[in-house]
Length: 110
Image: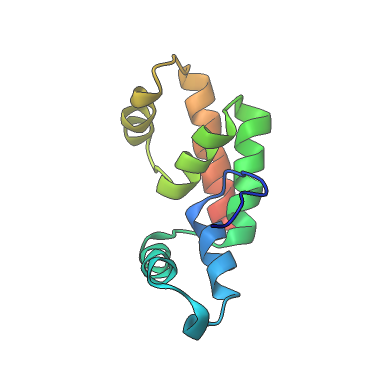
C-alpha cells in the first residue's frame, strides 16, 4: 500500500499534465481510465488552469476546492455560474460572480 505524502487540490488539466509525463505502458488500469477522462474533459492546459485557480482564490475569495471546480467547468455566463455555485450553499454576490467570469475570459484569451 502506498502512503499519502501530501494532499493537494488540482484541476483536471493539471491531472492531464501529470499523467502525460508517465509512460502509457507503465500506467495501471485506473491511471489509463483517468487519463482518457481528462483528455476528453479538460478545457485548458495545466499552466493556465493553475494560474486561474490561484487568481480565483486570491481575487474572488474562493476556497481552493471551489476554484478548482470553476476551472474544471469554465462556465461562460452568469446564469451558468450561478447554477453551478448554488451547490456551495453560500451567497456569492453578482459583483464577485462577474469577477470570476472576467478571470475565466482573460485566461482563455491568453
